[in-house]
Image (cartoon, rainbow, N blue to C red; front, side, top):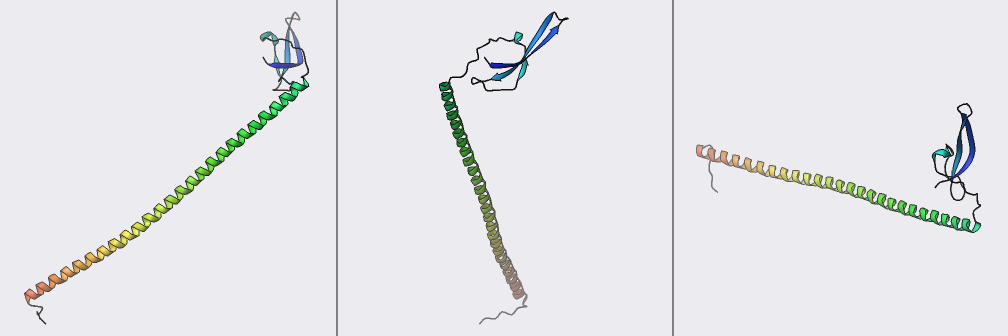
Length: 157
């Protein structure tokens, strides 16, 4: 059941004043007679209803109800603060994960650059060693060929 308060009545005569159509402007209210929604027009012939007596709320009951409402509001605020705290912790964790990922990526790039430099230096050293070996072999080959041809004198000390 919904509690309603009748604000206005609209009577329209139909069929030349033979029948009437009655509509009621009703205001939804809660148990404490506070408005709980916008008013709207309603034809009571289309719904079930009963007329209740208008009774003022008991002061003791109202005090208990207000206390319960205040406790519920405090519990809701605590639950909201707990949700905010959980959300803040999640945001901090995600920010730290992003920061750690960025640090890892930066360290990875630095390590790749360092290894690349070391590999280049090693390759350059190998290239130099190879080039020297090749030149030495060519020089030795030329000297041997010249000695065979007699162009280079052989001297022994």
